[in-house]
Image 1: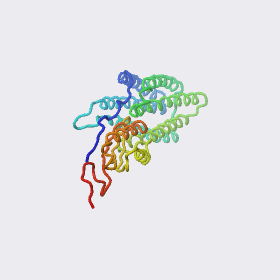
Image 2 (image 1 turned 180 degrees about the vertical axis):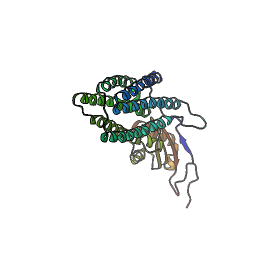
Image 3 (image 1 turned 60 degrees about the horizontal axis):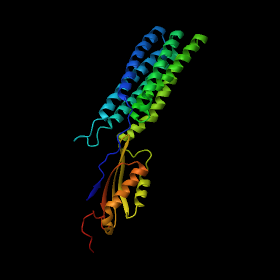
Length: 309
């Protein structure tokens, strides 16, 4: 069968100037903060602060994974990866989001145990160190915010950071209540709140990474709508065997068989261009492979002899 191919694989994914350098700085400040939080948590006896430190360490690791995946994704296409290496970022995102789920479940177990066995907490130590942690979380968020808007890989690491910032706020509130009222149970309650937020965010984002890795149809696309729109094109009799998937987070691809009358063969190139314009402009599908066929028994491929009775 004769396939007419459009060889552009789509636009280069948007990037942020100095993005790698910002990630390196974010990793460095989070590692330093983690050390300070662990020391403070052990000294004060605060599970919430240690939980925040563990989560903060995961922030640093998540940012490191995101940075590695980002570098791999920029490698050009080669003989073994003809679409390029863009999905490396989806692998990084999936790993980080799965890690978030594990952390959330671990914190729930620890918090429930602390509810039944409350431990003394040094409130002022908790508040002071959590305040420092919040400042670092804000700095990290500012360093990664722009990149998170365009990359699920960076967004997964960003969620680590934002949940950690909210956790720091919770730790400050909890520490204050312990100082004022001696409510030791607040430490465990804050930890449960941190865990709940982590699990919710991971549950919302991980299906997006899985869908791309499993070559699912993009969430904003309805295959039937694309097919119907292609069939409205002048000269097109039918469209079938339609497959649509994401090459990576920013590039969509389509394969389809297009049936045209034999008398339209002379207009094949203009029909192809019209279809590709529709796919690009209306559905953001920049890479498409269209195989043209003539109607008849078994939809004879283009170039085949006309069927005879």
